[in-house]
Image (cartoon, rainbow, N blue to C red):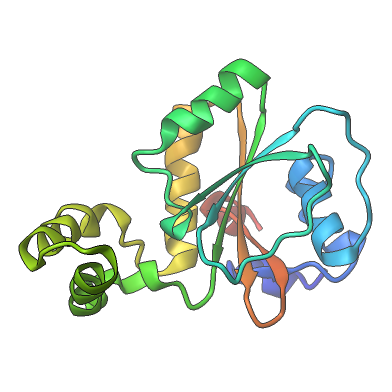
Length: 193
């Protein structure tokens, strides 16, 4: 693996087995990376081993083995306000690994810029009146706006790691045009590299 690339904190590609970060290798996250990017099938049981929170964007198409993971699709892979689903998977099914998957060209990076389109679209397509649509946008915009995808995913995995200290968290970036997952090393990884 290119150690300079790893040190930079930029998303790290997975083009071969050795490209998977050491911290991810023997985890369900490593299995996901090998399965999606390299078409290598992981060994897994008949129960889910991973919780995947991915952006709801229709362009994200993950190759995942059957019964391997729980999925939650939310705008920007943002679990703020959606922690109960994750808690259920951890508490009731023993999930110990979580992967947040954001993507390039995400509308949630600057959702504020789409206010007019959101309001008019909700009026036209949803049958809302303009005042209700504007109120909906204003109420949830700040909660759902992520800013830069890699910065957000790092902060969100750190936030969730503090809430669930016995669970392993990883952030991945899905590059839409490539249909590939990239690893986003945590801040601590950058500092120690």
